[in-house]
Length: 475
Image 1 (tube, rainbow, N blue to C red):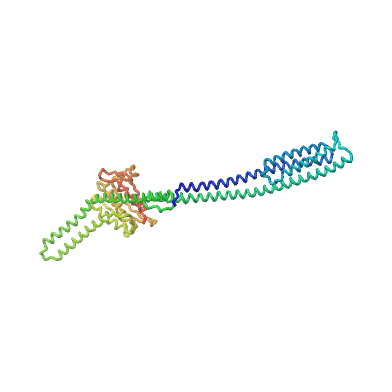
Image 2: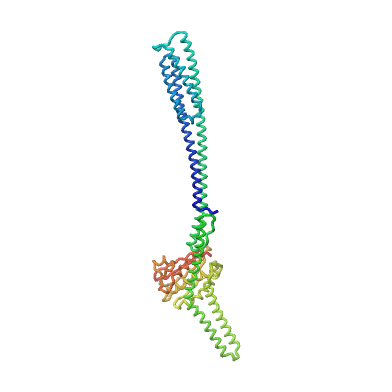
């Protein structure tokens, strides 16, 4: 089942957000509970200090028998009750000790026992001196000290347990945070992988294909199977590339036919000469057929055969050039290709133009001969047309030092190209020739053919100083 990219995002990112929210809530809850526990410990610690103060006044009373110490102790006990009630109301569900009501009862008992000493004093504050009072004093003291020790011990245990629990909670909180960070890291990695697989990889394939198209290499994009809009986009781009290839072939063929039109008069002249020679030889044979001179007749026939081969080579080269076929690079001898090209354009080169060709023998290259021949014809015809008053046309080729590339140049001494025209020289339909003389597709098509070979074509020119077209191609 195909899932659109939009749906993938809708499915992926809510999951990411839910898990992130869960981790956030877990971390917040852990922090909240820890904060509550710390406040409980702080309040219980305050309560414990209040009880210790009450015990201190209790001991001071036993040392001095001053009733003011009992009154202070009772005052602190009342504060302890209020503090314990506050803890029970505010933090009852978070406190570790669940027997706070029993502790409140113990504090009340302690308050009653310590309040009993007030009954043993006279109105002026002095302790009554009789046997009953002494017995009651000892009884109250024992009860008070016993109850005070119980409260103190219980609170010490509660505080110790709370601190141990808080410490364990801190350790757990650390673990929770590590888990949260690990989850976020894993989610980030998964999100990155999701974007790489579903966004970056398809876009990289499309980017590479567009870059190749810009270089003139209209190769199909490898099909991707993401089941979303990118798959449809690649399919659409491949359809566009197919159409571009067709249109490019049409442009190449159109320019080829235009070149054929230019070459027609020259080819006709190239065919006319051997046909005239053949006609002359046949007329002589017809006139002298009865005469006994077989060697002379054989010579005429051999000459006619040479002229037939010459005409056949011209027609074959013309047919090979005009044949419509796809991009088909092969290993060929570049000098042989140049010789065939010169045969086609020779009639277009007037005697006022000196032709110089410098190409090493056995220069083997891997190119599409038909298309590179089209480039050569276009550059040579342009050079000839630029030298209306004659000049020098030089064609040379060589292997570059790296051994992986070779270059050929077509140089003329014609009228040159103006600077403002150089940057547009390879644009489609751009021409400096008169209306009806050129289509404006020649150099544009040549540029496309060179880029199709993963090569480069450059031009150097100044007005009235000629032009040099340099083509560099991989071998």
